[in-house]
Length: 218
Ligand SMILES: C[S@@+](CC[C@H](N)C(=O)[O-])C[C@H]1O[C@@H](n2cnc3c(N)ncnc32)[C@H](O)[C@@H]1O
Image (cartoon, rainbow, N blue to C red; front, side, top):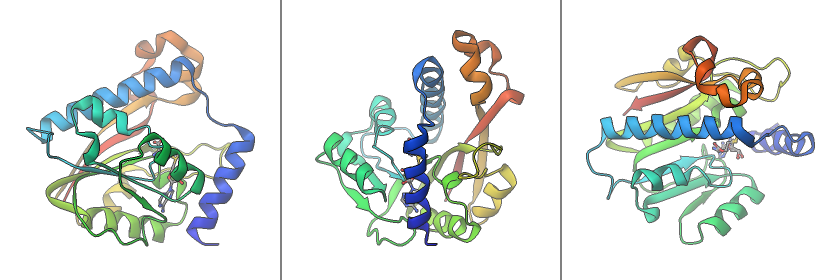
């Protein structure tokens, strides 16, 4: 099965099982992601006005708001996605932005970026060879001084065989050509986070966190 077929099957299944839940937990998770990304960007760059960012596997494009709220210009945000209905959602949400349509590993992208962002894309890709190819492509798309910004989970979910963790050891081996990697554990693990509601912050201690936010330097 090709990577495109795997991703299409996976997301058709997810639609019918409606795995996503919004609500208070999502609000806390999104706020924490925003604060961590904002902190990383402040420590890595001085001025965002002319910086550009490409999100690989951008879904419906909603993560663009993180960068806009941090001070990026909307026209400097570029998208990649392979699922047709998500590409359409990006087009409708961001009609004036560039979308690189298709499998990020294969499509030609004829320019470089200051930031390549990926959020829960690698854990959707089950095959190690594809993961390595995508990691290499992402590093290759960076301008000098650029960073890959990474958000993904580091533990398997025994109830969901359609996704597979990327732990820190694998992350380092995927980006073995990087000049430096650092990361922070974030996100109170979903099974706990969904139960504790407004006490998210109280329970959000490192050993209960399920994801990492990583910075991978060119
Ligand atoms: C779990 S969703 C995350 C969407 C978005 N990044 C977010 O954080 O909400 C993973 C997305 O990656 C896309 N994807 C997976 N592999 C891809 C690839 N090789 N090229 C482009 N998009 C890909 C899927 O179609 C899906 O929309």
